[in-house]
Picture 1 (cartoon, rainbow, N blue to C red):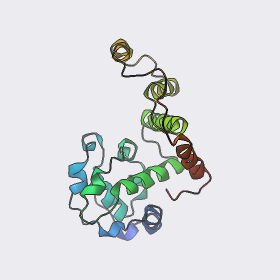
Picture 2 (tube, helix red, strand yellow):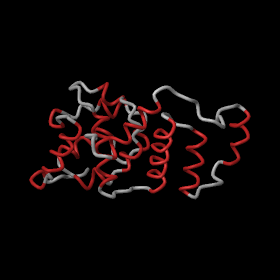
Picture 3 (cartoon, rainbow, N blue to C red):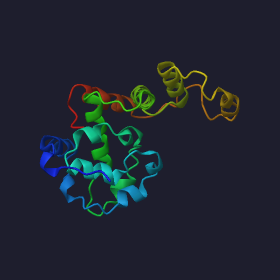
Picture 4 (cartoon, rainbow, N blue to C red):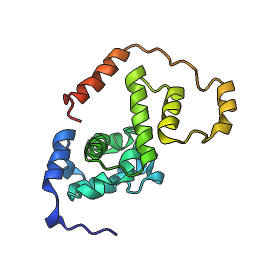
Length: 186
């Protein structure tokens, strides 16, 4: 069990997470519903409820170094299950952004994948799987990983060679542009 000195809590960290997420972390009473509903808990170093508790305790380093932030899929299961209507997924997103800004990278491969995914969404308005794979493999150096699966996947049409056109691609690109200019509170 990890013990936190609440007298040494980083109150600025708590205030920043609350301000950027527009959530009151103090209303979390550790019911565990967020963790119970999370499909990724098995891969986390700290379950969602523990991340929430570490934020409440002002444990900046522990939160921002957590592998869990990079593995969170923002699926909203935690948020929809919260009895206090805390947008827990938003808090996880904010902490991930803070970790990126602060230079915390727990695993290079996870960050490279997250960056490749975001690049794909920015460019195409959604994830273009084949392009995402190519960028990830090029940036990570994991070129021949799972290459034996390629024939099966390609023959089944699971990875189209061209991205699907979507409506609103330009609006998605503008969201990224606005974020880069600092217009987002995320």
